[in-house]
Amino acid sequence: MTASRGLQQRGAAGTSASVAEAKRPPETPGVTWRRKHILDLDDFTAEEVELVLQTAAAMAQVLRRGIPRVPTLRGRTIVTLFYEASTRTRVAFELAAKALSADVVSVAAQTSSASKGESLVDTARTLRAMGADVIVMRHPSAGAPYLLAEQQEASVINAGDGWHAHPSQALLDLYTLRQHLADLQGRKVVIVGDILHSRVARSNVWGLTHAGAHVVLCGPPTLVPSDLGPGAGDPLGLPPVEVEPVLDRALEAADVVMALRLQRERQQAGLLTGIADYIKHYQVTASRLARAKPGVLFMHPGPMNEGIEVAPEVARGPHSMVEEQVSNGVAVRMALLYLIAGTQPRAPS
Amino acid sequence: MSETIVMGPAEVRRALTRIAHEIVERNGGCEGLLFVGMRTRGAPLAQRLAREIAAFEGAQVPIGALDISLYRDDIHHLRAQPVVQSTDIPVDVADRPVVLVDDVLYTGRSARAALDAIMDLGRPRSIQLAVLVDRGHRELPIRADYVGRNIPTARPQAVQVRLLEVDGRDEVALITPGEEQP
Image (cartoon, rainbow over all chains, first blue to last red):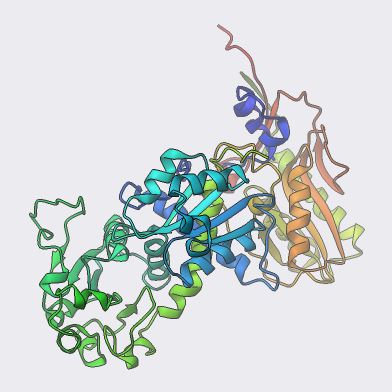
């Protein structure tokens, strides 16, 4: 514990020499994490993404232990506030918080005062007043987490907001990919399905582009924003991607195929000519996957509609990363909770 | 700010050689021993101790590296989180005499964190602590079993251990804060 940190800390009010002692310089030169909220990946730097992935790898080590628990966030309170159904995301955040010894409170909006008309911001302020340090929120409206981040003091992690963003999903997808492909630079990643309504696709476009991947979006023209693609006006602020409406062509020499869940309610909205048509043209099948590179990785954010966007033989086949994605989800969320913990003022006690 | 070199490469080497002999003597050999270096600079020190022992005892002591970031007690006081490194311990710690290795012993808080981190991995027969420098000012009832050099310091001073593997040279510097002399 070289005490040179003692020197660096001298100027900071309220720090003691003991604080200084433990502050070790990182082995690899990294960035200093300054982010209090995790809202989307659009403004992440490549270095920040790298730090999350590196931290997640250390967290995965903890999860492999006989007793997967470390005392890091003892005394912290993490609230999951879900205004939409979720199994894997909510459970992954809760397991992540518990593995770090935080206290976890789970609020489902259906059973909370939100159903009495309490506003989102009031709910969050109440949770903060009761000691929440981090609020993990899923909400059907795009931008809702941004409002919370502005209007109250707790850290906010966006666990999915409308069609907008799902940053922790994109980070766990990147983490999963990096375990199989050392470098994503120049890799062809096809995202197929309902791109228009997919927060997973949107956040993944950011994450994958930061990592240098070549992203191809594929889906029925009614479900792919028409103004994407190279040279497009970029109205959604997304980085340039390739759009290829024909799945067989999109899959040529692909390294990764990511299928999205087809939300059946879209059919009612008149955006699909029919499920049978969708299956015919866009289902990821073993024979279609044969057009991709031999070691192609198949991913899906879940929950899967087997037999619709993906054939069962692919969903559970040798190329499928789906289970890995789920188990990596806990490590990646531990990393996020750990990293933002250093930037928070403690909740009032 | 002024800097004094208090140990040079030869002194670092001699201190480590002596500690290596002391470890073997104290443990009656190196049967079952495990060296665990605390990241960052404890890890290369643990490797060097193991090399010394391999040279004069002909036995290979297994070496691990420990990251204590997740066990620190000052998470609320720092402005940014330290980067979590991997913990790599090649053998089960259960029933082994474990020697924790670090560069500087100061308040004892890192050693406390390391004890907890080791205990979470299993139940060692014993844990001993080896440090290159003990600079005093303990805040916890912790002492080292093997010390390369005791360096009396004032709190505002800093002790910086530099190692070939990390910093490109072997030396220990005592740094005193203050105005630059004209």
